[in-house]
Length: 76
Image 1 (cartoon, rainbow, N blue to C red):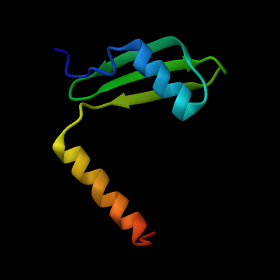
Image 2 (image 1 turned 90 degrees about the vertical axis):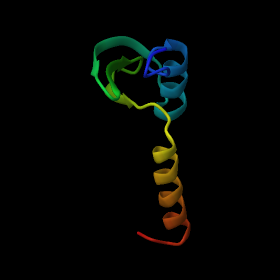
Image 3 (image 1 turned 120 degrees about the vertical axis):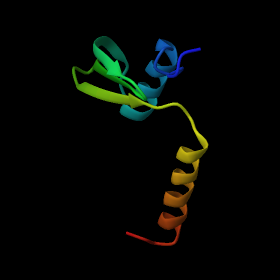
């Protein structure tokens, strides 16, 4: 099993790009990484972006939860 399942699924990566960046990838420029996958893409609107894909871990979920609670409490 790949350590970066979302990075190895072009359809899921394209869906993420469209949802969060408003454009679909048309070309992969580069791919690198060890603990996370780093992927350079050219989007349909001609932007070039770099996406970092990390495997889901309990630590990551805990960090996101702390950030969410701080935001809700009004922390700048």
